[in-house]
Image (cartoon, rainbow, N blue to C red; front, side):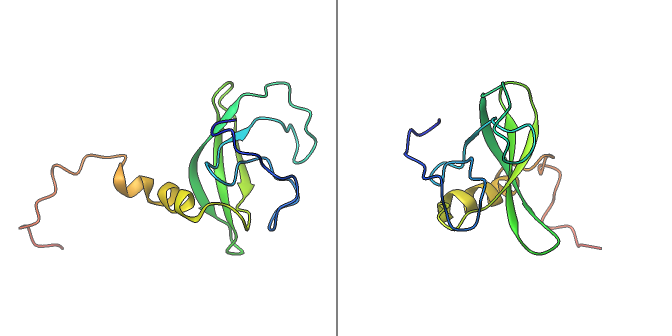
Length: 108
């Protein structure tokens, strides 16, 4: 949907592929995992990564149409640099200001 790359339906690491391995964007297609019954069909932006208890990684998507949050397993053919950029996003753009940090102050 985003980068117009052809996405295969069978990929290593997932049985319900609904995101692009190149740009990681998705489409809001499921009400329940794999049912493809959602009427929204809006683009879903990759906003974060999560690491599950078993160590598996998943992409967190937010629907640009209705705001729904969903996770989808990282697949074996997902673009490594896109995953790293997503993982490093909080460090590059922290949710809090860093201006008050003074490197000359000793840490407690």
